[in-house]
Amino acid sequence: MKKFTELRADGLTTDRLREEIALHGYALIRDLIPQGAVRGVLNDVTQELTRAGWLAQGHDPMERVTFPEAACGDPDPCFKQVYQRVFNLESFHALPHHPALRRAMQMLVGEYLFVHPKPIGRLIFPNCERLVTHAHQDYEFVGGDPEFYTAWIPFHDCPLELGPLRILEGSHRHGMQEHARANLHVPEIPMDTAMGDKWVGGQVNAGDVLIFHSLTVHAASPNRTNQMRLSLDCRFQDAQRALNPSNLVFAGESGKSWEKTYAEWQSDDLKFYWKRIPLRLEPSRDELVHLAETAKSPRLRARYIRMVSQLD
Image (cartoon, rainbow, N blue to C red; front, side, top):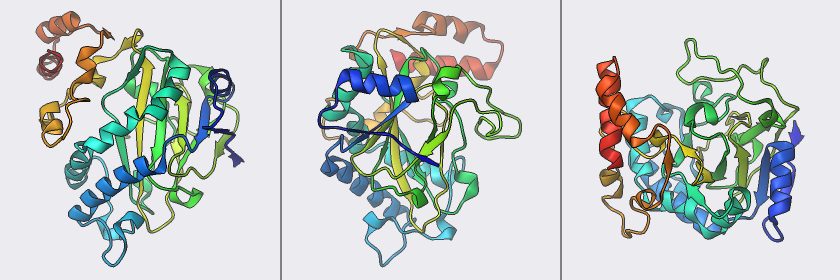
């Protein structure tokens, strides 16, 4: 597999970063975030994994050594419980707002940077094929304006055998690609139909950030070690562009809420920060109210009601 092209954080310029994204659909920036900031999140996450009994005894939790019997993932109930505790961590939400990352993302989207408030944690067990993330485009799941970007941030050094992301170079130039859905928990692009140039990959280390366009096709490599692969991905866009409101709220029936997420936070700085920013929601709040009254399915009406209540 062809290796990633690389940029260095020191000396990074707006023109160079935009050129890299326009040409390849991605940019790997080495040493963008101080390792201490990333390591702090790793420490908090591994504490939760230790509490869950997912990590092998006799090893430093930061090494993330696990065992086959612990393997689980979405939609397993045991996974969802632990994932929610990780999602609730204040440090987990603070990392996408790190000043170094914000500066880089402003180079791409401009001064009106909006950080999506629901980062996604990847808690990937080794040697478990059903948990490998297959080829897809983020726009398929996020919606809104397609001019947004994802930043993938590993919490530790991630050599090839740990299963870092790989990118289908140039795939962002082919628009929306068809995702197969039949008999799949998560839609994916079949490898034989994915359009782009060549797959690229390589080791990504703690402090590095892999940024890619919403239409860039990407996938995880299989984790062939005895360690968990832990990472975060978060999304960024111009606040003036359309935003799907489902990216701000918990629209499902799980009972999740921002109040529960914030319950043990020490600072108020990032609580409901998105409510202080004028955003262009599509559908708008008024349209959601109308959908809550007119949707044919009771399940959909309930979903829209939950969304409206959390936007207020």
